[in-house]
Length: 87
Image 1 (tube, rainbow, N blue to C red):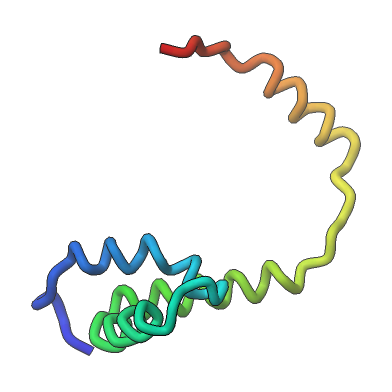
Image 2: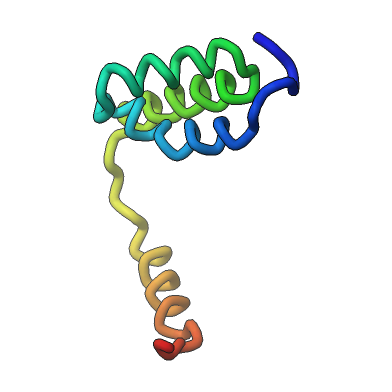
């Protein structure tokens, strides 16, 4: 993996596709491009591995009911948010 001698714009383009890559929603050529880039870019490799681990953890989390107290407070906060107008 190399240091900072590459095009950071390419990192941003890869990052935009990362979620779809992890979910298996991209074509083979795009996946190959992402994998090649991640192999050569420490930051993108780290980001990709972290996102993979996060997705795996989320898939294994069991649904739990939200405590009624919390739900009530959240609804109150949302209702008291300032109203915005459309332009």
